[in-house]
Length: 556
Image 1 (cartoon, rainbow, N blue to C red):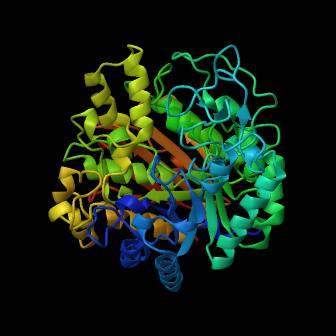
Image 2: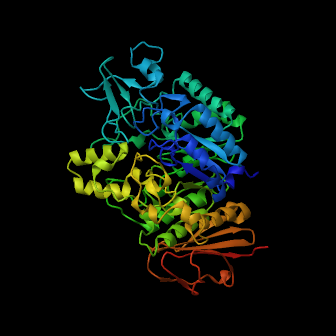
Image 3: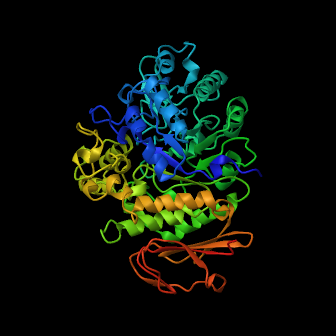
């Protein structure tokens, strides 16, 4: 099939609140982003995914939208957005907007009307139900802890919120809601944006009858039982037919609960729905089997490899992968799967980048990932801003599953705020992010880890990312080569091949600080070293701590 532009792209995600503050209020903004666009271009990425910038009361940092066609006051104005978009395009950068339409804010005019009376014309824009047996309509749980239902005294009914109580779920079964959403999307596309990242889009179609689910360890049925509902693909194909197919876009669906078979529908190369999906199976590879994210890490490299390999193999030639370690919802990958030790931090950051970027799919670089930024050393629950972290901690703490001390330890490992601390631009006050007091604290290691130092140092993590991105532009085998996993059960080595015709890559990554002996296969004997994260050649048959080597054979 004809190659799409986004198959050779690398996407840079910006979390606007934490990227660059231009006016000293401690909050990143659109003029701040505009001032840093050359940095993104120089990295080599060609597409920017903006986390939500719409008007919002910020219960969930912008993922609760009160007006889809206005800009959050803290971020600037629509004129500021237009300036940013024009400059991005002039630099050869595309802009992808975050689309949050599973739910809105409870301060959106639709919901304000909807809750005003049972017979209001907007009532059916949301999901309202009578209580049952003196309580909620069913036992569904919110992603942020507790029940997914909120009782509303004004009309003596409950509304559904799979996330915050201030994020009521939209009723996609109502065709008028779909009309509203599609018209809004078309309005943004006519302004010239280049695509959408679709937040929890796999949850828009709820199960018929909203039945109870099997209770989880904290008593509530997991919210993911609502994923991939009966009309999911019908509604996305309608979206594609009425809006997306009219433009040349990158569209990526955040698909919680997606299976491989479902992904072949969401991201089919026939273009009937979306360009690609974000799946979370590999993000769950180190989750606790009972308590999920907020429990001691259970690192399991064979499980991680098996998951990534399965997605590589099964989608090859059928649908398209998205590749990511970091985003605004995940802790920093260097702290998660690499090493924060000074002697190994940059080596492990480069190794992790190599492992991901040599796979088939569109890679995503989250702000600061290209510098090897790490988790924040939280010391108190009071420092945490993230509604998900706080909600789950309070729920687990109240039920006796987690002490406050354990909670702080979990925040250091797992909180989404680890990804949201300000971007580390330089070693000066507030890391060059703001002249005021930042909304979240700046990581104290910004004096060592920052963009100003790395941009001018040829062996930095930043410059290594430039090489990786350049190679993807140049080599078809990286974009289209077939994947084979080697040593699937090895607990420390992640080794795979990519093959396209006579050309092949052997990617060898050591996920540990142990030196490991490993013999290169005979068909790669004498192959050229395409990329390595150590400055000196490797000893034959041996991988040093956190080493990454890519060998290339059959190159013309």
